Length: 142
View (cartoon, rainbow, N blue to C red):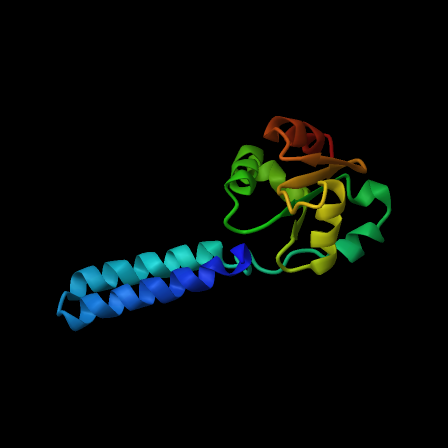
């Protein structure tokens, strides 16, 4: 269910925008429409493009995937991690679990059946919602 909240946000925002526009309130309608569009894009599973695939990463040698971050759009903990890593976060391999069923299954396998993100694999060991400093420290060594 949570995966499809972005669709509900788009529909609700579109409806509210239409109501304002039909009442002749053009400026509030434009502002609400823009806000709806931004919120929808940011919570969409396609935000930040296609991610890497879990199966492709597992096939790589260990030294080519020292840090793999399993994440999903709209997750405040994932956003916290991304902000905490800054530019060094580009060195990690990012897997959007909403775009990859195998990634979702992996995350559930290391989190007692829950799709808890971010789940970060550092040198083969899974960490659930780790401190960004821990991840940054490993990425800086890459």
